Image (cartoon, rainbow, N blue to C red; front, side, top):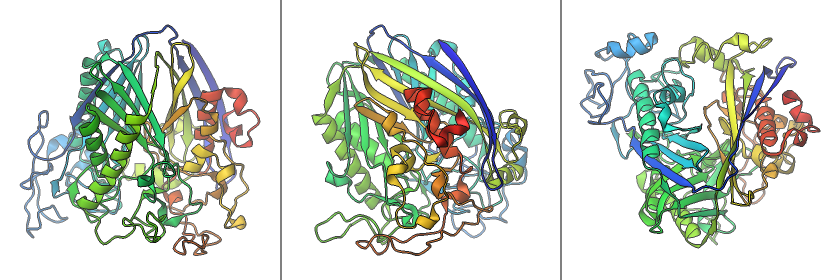
Length: 577
């Protein structure tokens, strides 16, 4: 094992990101050919009804939450109604004293309380083992998760695991589901009131630990690895399913759908890893039933056809929404007459969501059926940790208000000298699956938060062309994808934390606490074939740590993939050199 530490400190001018920190890079390699094994598990985290391991309160609707008097008979808790304040929540989070704790649904506006559960939410784990390296891919059906929360988070789940599980590396993520419980604290009854349910979040930690434990226990020999990667040009079912938030230019996506299937001796899949770049929010903001959105139907379709357990991990989905969201009328046409049957908001319910999920799941199963089989003998993993400091004071305000429960030692401002905003950790990995000759067959890179697809694909070749005056003049970040040399490539977003949008700095307009900055070309149309595509305000920056994080993420990924020489001459990478 080789350990390398690179330290850097940068303080930029006012309005830009203040950044300081150190990077620890860890390399784990296994060269001797060994039988690849896979283990997989799906453990429910659905907050309804009776469930093993849940000892918290259950409301009369069956949804978990503190008991309350439904004075207006609407089947949910409303501010002002009396409730039984469970002291166990208060002991976990003192700010919960006097606050109703239940299932506030995340991802849209405030005060959306769940009235039931339509389908299960899951903690899913897929473990790969080559005899030397054992890596666990872990994902939860939540809008986002922290690794280092005060009383909850992936690190708490990891601490519950026995050493004999032998996991050498953990890759954590969240599906970014907008129809599940608030796990961050941003979607409570009001903008400045925490929406987390402490007892539920500690339950999720236990279920995550159980998923990893069960996946390790199920390790079995892999007889064959199948792989697929396709896009709308090759698979027309995918056409027009992705849009940009508010039609924000450039109208660019990482539109590749990717999957790996690990088959057993009977030819059926033991486990399938699916990777796609779209927000799971088809059910939208009026839905009051807990669901894993279209991800549920993708996994169900794949499991029904291929067998085994499907694990869905999101890709670089910054600014990428499912059709029918905030760019209605701007989605790419699916039909010869120029229409797109999904591009409206007349029916955003479960029927539409199922159709979308089964379309995508069907593409996965068909492509894997005819796809390539590859030899995987060894797993290489390279990782790096570093610190970021937020120029967007919204994040620090969230911590001061008690919305964000961040481990005070891990998020100690003193660890980012010279910075003024939130100081937090980030970690990234590059995982390479190699054949018996050592040739790379699959590369997987992880990125935190919601990375804009331009940062993965390459900013320089995917810049806006509609409004030259909007260019901030800051250098373009390098392409992560261009640094990946394997024939098959994946990018796992939201890993391990949801730290907001990561925006290319040439188009980054800082926000002032929830106030969106106006684009110089606001409302200007930029595609004559789609008049709806007009320039919006800069929403994403309101929930972005800061402009320079894009450089940290892309340059770290490129260095992990191709070495320090690959970023030596990149102006945007000066912050990490």
